Structure formats: C-alpha cells, structure tokens
Amino acid sequence: MKVKRVLANISTQNPGRAKAFYQDVLGLDLLMDHGWIQTYGSPVEQMSVQISFASEGGAGTPVPDLSIEVDDVDTALERMRNAGFPIEYGPVDEPWGVRRFYVRDPFGRLVNILGHQ
Image 1 (cartoon, rainbow, N blue to C red):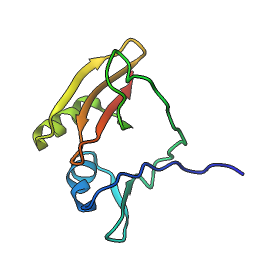
Image 2 (image 1 turned 135 degrees about the vertical axis):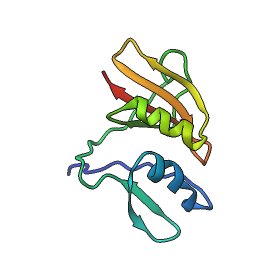
Image 3 (image 1 turned 180 degrees about the vertical axis):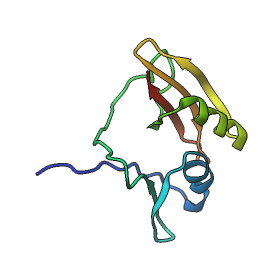
Image 4 (image 1 turned 60 degrees about the vertical axis):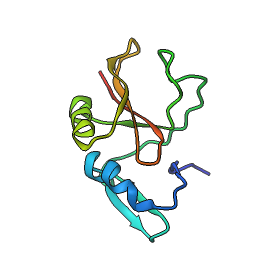
C-alpha cells in the first residue's frame, strides 16, 4: 500500500467562502464542487505527500493550520494585502532557508505562505 495524497479538510457551513482566498488570491483551481464540499488544488503540479507535527511554528510563532508553498512569496503577500486579508507575521527570511508570512483565511485558519530560498 502507498499513500497517494494527503488532504486538509476544513469544517465550514459555507464552503463558497474559500473562493476569494484560495482561488482568487492564491490561484488554485476548483477541482471538485458538490455544494457541501469544494476542493481546490493544482491539477498540473505534482504535489508530494506530507504531514507535519509541531510544537511551534518556528521563530516562536504559533503552529499554522496550513502551509502553502508558492513560487513568489512577495507577489502572494501583495495579493493578500490587496484582497484585505490581514498579515499576522512577516514577511521574513527565516534562518532555515524559507521566506514566509502568516495570514488568516476566511475561516480563521492560520496559513503559512512560504517559498524556499
């Protein structure tokens, strides 16, 4: 047996609220929509299976609910700010080789947006 994919499931009474953050700002595609569940992703990109367990988020920050790697952190930051999503940490170049910032999604989840340097 081989694990093929790990998905994050976020409980909400209004899945449509995800569109502004995950599709409009981050550019993910709506891969599935059954009304009660909407799944966003990148069908062209090869995503690896990862799951992390942490006592902190690094640099003394809280553990984020999600981490999303992007190819251009500064563009993602600008798009988040322009869309009105409050930045809670960063942007910062961390000593372990990532540039990142924290932002809250429409459901209050703390999201770590990062890029490897």
